[in-house]
Length: 636
View (cartoon, rainbow, N blue to C red):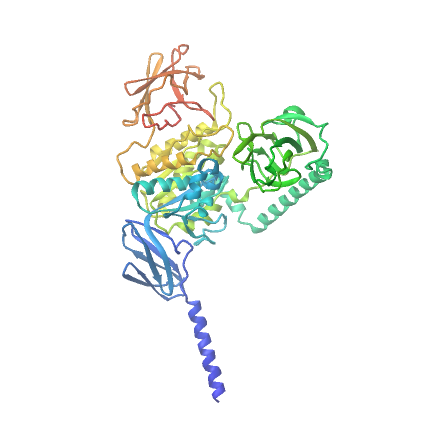
């Protein structure tokens, strides 16, 4: 009898324990240790529990309570709070530590927002080694897509304070923005970073926002099919695997080990690096091997070194003295390879590079650094290299369907889970992937901004846009430009929507790199917009802002927004083009006079319009005296 009662009691306790465990409150990923809560706003703390479960939140000596609803959801509103911390919060049996109260921003977009600090080492390496700021914190949203429905929570992520280890993976733009604001306001800054390289704006919009764009809705509906996603990915992977397997089998350099130190390469051709072997060999896809001999002084054998091979289109595998020192699988990342001690030799050394190119013009990208650094000395690797073709393929490498970029997918998985978390505003650096259809961009972006503000229930939340930088080769004559058109769409959105700012960076791009390294200037200019729009400071945050034009004989007089028309003096204004009555654009002269810009071309008697910096990679120099550049614009 005793044994039976004991077993029954044990069973009751076990069942009760399971019940208690199941009833335990669960929190979303954002509500966690180290979080920064938005100051001066009523705050929502939310989570999940069993139906009817009582939830108690204790924070700053006050207790708040609620009950989970029929679906197990609960939320509690906290009053407006002042900046400070660190604090502790308890939610039933959960204790959250190291909480700060400050300003929180959502930073989103594509690769230029995503670009991590580790990719910016040449410019900011020393800062990254010494940074240690508990008041700048990042939450990096996992990169996932979902076409079926908006998610309520994230599948991971954590709040991280800034130190030499964590900063490596932080968005460079968002870090410098946060650093600038913290230095000015001395208020903690939290960044919720949610971006994905290559993503178009429609990927960050929900289905309702895309009603005017049936082709995007159709595309989103198509990819709700898991079987289609699986078959597409597996089919493309198989084709790609087969292409590269054929390439490797055909590449005689792999079979004869052209990376070896003692290979006889005396019969190989030569070319200058940087440059393209296709200029000499004609266009083809396949593999090409390169070799360069360098002589190092005595004592080099036991030293570590650093190899910088700029950028290469597309992929490379790099060897020194037959030892593989690194590889990159696509064209955009820089080739930075650390060379361990023992790889280099005293005297003769051989650098060998196998380059594979699946489509387009294969090349070592011009105007990038190419050197070996050892013992504080840089050995220039530009100039003559030997090369030999490993294999030519009959067709291009198979293309890829980038499913993760399809409409609504990123909104559902990387934006919707954030909307309960109160924020001060939004940072947006995106547009490169929409330059194929630039004229629709302004409407798409406007719709997205309005929707995000509605979802966060903050109709006046500051939305700060980074305009696309100058990029690609400069053109000698005024021509149409999709990049210029998209920049103009960004400009118009910033002028037409309240509480929207534009960080113009037309002066800091790199013609040969879609990812310019100067992310500090981008962050600083976003911070200026924040101080003006979000903090209501009376500052100049914009370069000259075009407002109107007037035709006066054979000249056009341009007027600019008051306060931005204090032009910096230059010997000659550049970047202006004027349109004649026949609809043709020609370069124009321009001068500043009394807060106006007067534009003309002696050969144009009846001008009808003006453009400024209307090109992929323009060279205009219109700035105000604070050094901020004018946005590209058209008077049409």
